Image 1 (tube, helix red, strand yellow):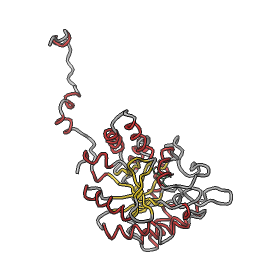
Image 2: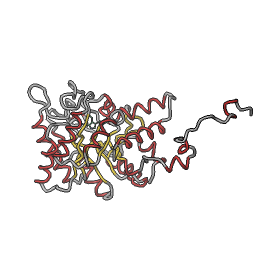
Image 3: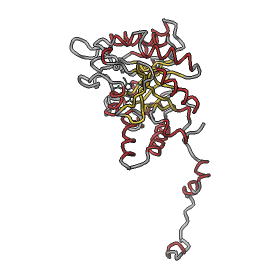
Length: 338
Ligand code: PBG
């Protein structure tokens, strides 16, 4: 090989600091790696529906399924065997059971109470986090009850969320995750749980939950009622950061055990800032639209979904997330550390 003149000449300058030394082989790159993804960092969301032996792929989220409780057991057993032990449960409620007042949310025969009782019995070592919000149960698709003007009513909604939390705690939920963004709900739910004797039930607050387009596929997943208006009167404006820090600060004061930021990938600045203002663990939710977007790119031959997911999760963890909710665990499992 004939080398170009510039590669054969001794340079006339010296560069003592050469960062490429620590990038020169796989061994040294691994030695200086700052962030690693581990199995324990991940929470597997599960969509649960009524019935038996039923498993349905969600059209807006390829390779994600709605499971009847018996089918969910198979998925959970698979996850536990692979080292994933925590699950976020979401209900899929049939159209006939949705109502203006979200009555099904408080039914002991509902899919979540029934699932909790069964799943806790079958998998005592698993950890179950249950979403607390009314949108799967309302005919109008909002996370709370509507007042006579059609506005989401803060305090009456909290009253239902408190009852829901007590019901789910009594059925075995390890952690309750209010995702509704009502003001003051963390303090009120904590008090209701404590007064009812459920001091051990933990609270993960969706503290910085933005009004995001990226939730679109999820609404299809839970067969949400067609939304009248927007969720902008309770979820955060994507333009705001200080407001998110204030939400997180208030939730911590109201004794939330974990603070969540959602969506995750486009909100790493929020993750990083909340991490630096609190000593509580930080969760990030890589949401349905973030998932679907990467799969759509792979389908078009643009890039590999596996590599994209891995890179996004590294970024989310590097920003400060201690745990990550995602639908993409199966794609990255082979690359995760124990
Ligand atoms: C319910 C809830 C939503 C998500 C989690 N809990 C939807 C919403 O607020 O509209 C979104 C999750 C996802 O998109 O993956 N309040």
